[in-house]
Structure formats: C-alpha cells, structure tokens
Length: 154
Image 1: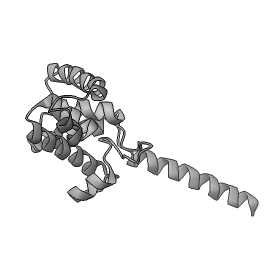
Image 2 (image 1 turned 90 degrees about the horizontal axis):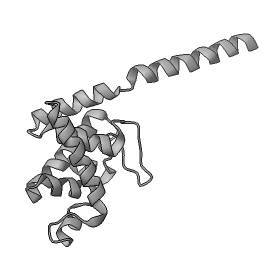
Image 3 (image 1 turned 60 degrees about the vertical axis):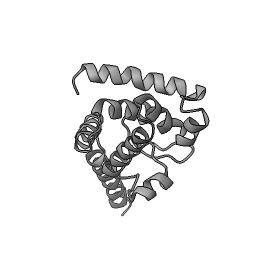
Image 4 (image 1 turned 90 degrees about the vertical axis):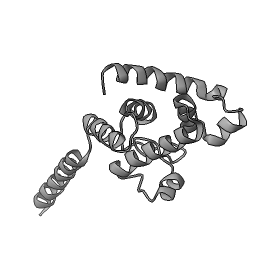
C-alpha cells in the first residue's frame, strides 16, 4: 500500500510539473504577444517591449511587494478599471499597452508617458510636466532599450 501511495504521489508531482511547464509562456511567447497586441492597438512594439523588459523581464509569473502583477506589473485597481484580469497574460499585455497609450495621449511625449507609467500621471503634473528625478533612471533605461529594439526593426 505504501509503495502504491509513493508511486501515486510521485506521478502527481511529475504531472503537476509537466502541466506547469506546458502552460507557462516562454519569453519569446510573451514578446510575440506584446508585438501582436501593440500593432493591433496602434502602439510601437519597441516601446512596449522596453517597458515589459524593465518591469518584469518578460515574466508573467512575477508579483512585486506592492502587489503589482505580471509582465507589465499592473495593479489590481488599474486592471479592474479596464475590465481585465492581470493574472492572464493576454489581459496583462493589453492593460500595459492601454495604460501606456493613455499616458501618451495625456502627455503627447514618449518620455513623459514612460515616466507616468512609472510614477503616475499626477507625479508628472506636479513636476510641471517634466520627468521627476526619481523616474529619470527608469526612463533612461527604457529609452535606451527602445532604441535597440527600434534598430532591430520590430
């Protein structure tokens, strides 16, 4: 009986691992999802890839200490306002792109949109529509990666 229980336990663990690996999106899957949705939504894929790289390293399974979730590190509040589930890759990507797109519409500048993505639109407004000092490293890194992705014709 113990032998049977051990075998069942062993196969349960192996099966769980297999299912997890089959369901987990690879970095390439995540990048392709971002590129596809960005193009469909009229946003440059290069900027969205840069933001996702900085926010999560293209990982959907990541959760920050402050509770932000997934590839684009969406908050529950932001996702809920958009009617999205931040735990689902498709929704997380859509939410990240929509949020960036909204910030770009608000500030009409890629750098300010990226800063607002990081610090929130109120921080940009309080800083007289300039990048706050604490967001400058984030923006610089995003813009550096953006230029690299842009050169690779994404």
